[in-house]
Image 1 (cartoon, rainbow, N blue to C red):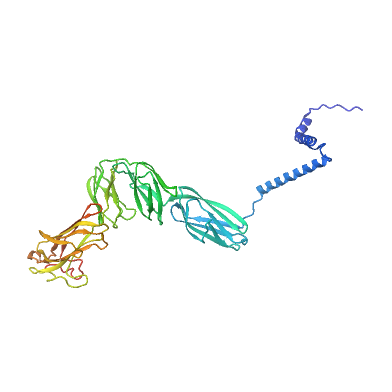
Image 2: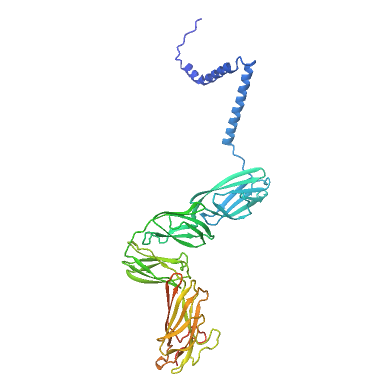
Length: 509
């Protein structure tokens, strides 16, 4: 019986070939390797070949299992946890760091040691518990769920940017490491133009304020771009005035730029001018001239921190008296005027020793003893005697050519009695009593003189408290600078406000 013939397309055969091609390629490669490496070389080549294939298969299986575990099975949780905390970080400022360690799920395997890996340039100010030279703190053994902390107070000396803090925990033979990134948000050492717009002196230099805004002293500051190169120390809240031409300036500590900025000159209004007088005692004085209404900005070390004040001034000339908050012994103070057009030149003046002059008249001493003579209240036609005291306040620098002059009012005379407690000489001239000191050394006590004055009231003084002293003026030369210092005091009458027993008894009867 003949089998009927079938017509085929060959698609099924083509499909099988394609599907089996990889298997045939592999077996072909294995047959070739068997013939080249095993056949004829071993007594039992088939067994050796099969053994090698088995080893290869086991290795491949192990690799696959490890890959699976790595991808799909999470690692076991560490037995210790660490939580790090700190306030926003400022360079060059004391900074509290806290690392809290907790035993998770089970007791620690032994004594726990925490090693801090701090950035280069870090200064450790305090540590609780103490750390050794390697930065390691011993936290003891922990029961499950217990916590222990390592606290540091440090100063980071690093430029703005990221800060990396590393940690290494050792628990018996177990070592765990980690790190935390923080950003430096600012610096306790700051550089700012003394006047916001970048106003400059006549030579184009811009005054810049270098400030220590931390609670700790800063040492060994290196400067670039300024007319000085180093500052040995800067106390807390202390300012140092530096000068630089427009451009880039920086302040470095431990070779790191802690503060830096680009200085740009302010627009100029040449018609805005200030004139400063030497500053002494409790008041600084200046004169301002502006072509249109503007602002006068002042930096004075005698003003409360940050030592600046501003004043609105109308067009024209204005005199400004600035009450100071404290005595100041720094070398200079600065002021500048500005309008909408720009800034004038920054002007500089000396800060001299305080030169405060005070005066009082008494009928009774501060002890209560009577030192005056005659009727009180004073009577027309009768003489009443008082003691006039004038005092120069404490000084910080030596003075020479000190002259204090008190001009007596009508019907008042000097009796000839006086007490020059601090020395010097006395004279009278055209109704003035004059006290002179050739030299007055710096003193925390100052200097004092007393004079007895006599008043014989006239009838037209009845019902009034007549003047005893019309005016008081004082002047001196500051030895170190050669500057002349001047001070004035208003007149004094018979009201005697400083004398508790006599005040209110000054009206002539």
